[in-house]
Length: 182
Image (cartoon, rainbow, N blue to C red; front, side, top):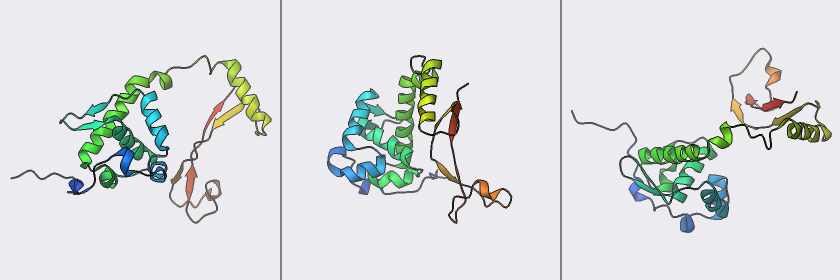
């Protein structure tokens, strides 16, 4: 029996090759990647991305294209098949490139998010930040929060519905991360 892949047979070869400088307007760049064109190039420099990424099966992707694949994937929940027309690559390659770029960034910069930064997160600085938030009218004077703003659909509730009702027909729950300063 002949092997049949489970991925959709999308005609990626019929689409125009991804060329960051030529194919994408400033508005498309902002809408699809949530960054302006110049900011994406700067981001690639700041993240110290290599000139190319090579997938295990041999596909090669330039750094700006790899970063754009990752940014598109992170900008809004979408399937890899939704990005085939933009990047002219098959779904497995888009997946590999996205994972390789993400792993590269994490491997190089994970210490920035996994290590406590005493220079900006010391008790005195946190208290100053908490005081500044409180001075702007916060309900509590010993809290500060980072509002994510992510809204996730939830099932229709019968009991305690008022806790998550946002005034629309849809029932959504906003996620909020808050830190307490003791």
